Picture 1 (tube, one colour):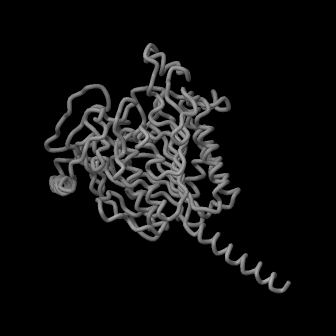
Picture 2 (tube, one colour):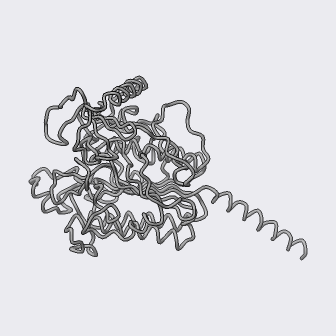
Length: 458
């Protein structure tokens, strides 16, 4: 009897050690919206869209006001986030086809290491929920890039539109049956067309299920919402709820989704061991007028290299670990890969160039961001470059349509600390800053090696 007692005690102790070892690394959740504008959240200044859960997330965590993506359109931006590398390095950007389409034969190369593949080295469970858009063929799907589980759509929700449906009708009076985009689970098609009226709700339920079922094991959830990319859809509970109309309804449902995820973390006691990052893939799609979002005080939107196209509303949340506050230092989605690697105690791969910086010191409130530069690519060309507070535009071009490039010599120069709206060109007064930026671009371009362009394979 006595021996049995000690056997149980020893077994309990070993079990406790095992549980601790599984939980000593933080869970990581990235919530990535599609075409959300810098000014579309209450905490970033929108006057008629209610986002109480995101507002609370900002209050409890960090609100980053100078956070950028790697490109101003879907595919290259997502490649940048997941690989920690500018899309020019992986062949995931193009001057001819800006994103992948249902007829594309390319995708994120197997040679690339995603954040999911990296975290698998530390025994993380990895799940991709939502929009992928890095290749729909089997060899490019999330389950071929380090994710244990995939539930979502393989490309944008406006693709596979029924050919005989007029574009104005399709986007102005959207119906589920106008689009043939499939909803997938791993490599299987569950539903085609996907019921987009319930898709935000179902993505949320999938994320909450994983949170509840994986509480004793570290996990990485990449939740990439399909919305607010047009066509806009929301569930019954959010119809005509927002003063902002349909677009506001969609954002308020995303806010609800964030609330459900944070509640699930609190209810299961995982909030103190989970980093949640909220941001967007690019700025608002302004060509859709009232069905597009707002970049707030920033100039431009999706598709362009002015600030509204690539500076995103971003929040970091991790109660008890993150030092709350407003962070005005620059950061990018490419910084997430090295930050996650650091948190999971995984060495960075040394066989390739990375474009991100570890942000853990900033999150913990014990240091500054190492990032001083932001590179604004459009396709394969550097259109603009930020160094410190100053941003130089060497090329500008309208976001959509078929406009000609405008080459600026000298470049346009803006002090973004004083002029985030990019209204006041200060190039004449600052020739030495322009020279420093040119030197930085020359150095950067020497690090680029030519690779196969994945977006042009058909």
